[in-house]
Image (cartoon, rainbow, N blue to C red; front, side, top):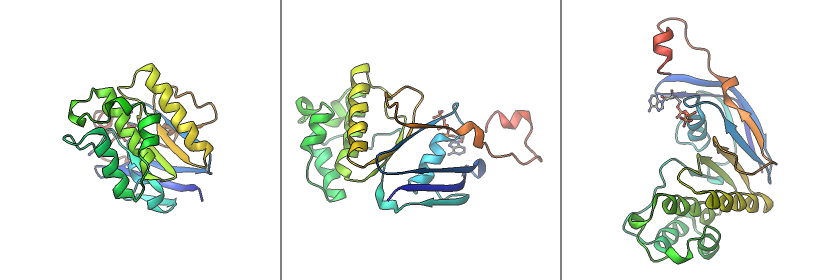
Length: 207
Ligand SMILES: Nc1ncnc2c1ncn2[C@@H]1O[C@H](COP(=O)(O)OP(=O)(O)OP(=O)(O)O)[C@@H](O)[C@H]1O
């Protein structure tokens, strides 16, 4: 099972954003999405994750194969680090939270409430959630925001381990994650042609 995207078109706020996006990922492979701010990376990831319908084209993979990590970490503020992971493990029907605690360097913080974590620690916990989903396709939107250099390297290792065990990843990022094996897709090439009527230079600045 892989992720196959054919001729995908995505819209945001009712405006066409991307069109003609096609790619395939097989088990063990990663795709890094690049492109300037506002070009539609988040829009594409949300469409892959099933949070918004495609405007056209196809995403061929079962929705339950995907784990999505958005800009927001989705943590339960009053639950501890362990309790957050146990909560997500229960949602996804898995059991092991120890690997995630260990690999995301959260063991020493296991008993601390999520609301009392630093920004980077919250991000590590948000990413640790991916590991307890048991899902093969990780769809990640700027996963390294707030992470220090050591944590970026830690996360790179986690992604590599996921790929080595047959997982897949689609990652929007502006930084080098240290995944030389990943393919790069620049989304600027897929910018949807704007309707001629009513969209001049002024309006385009907001698209
Ligand atoms: N809820 C919304 N309604 C209307 N337009 C939106 C909405 N959310 C985002 N947009 C617009 O859609 C376009 C694409 O946004 P998107 O978040 O997909 O870009 P991005 O490539 O992920 O950017 P960045 O690198 O800054 O994260 C932007 O021009 C943005 O202003």
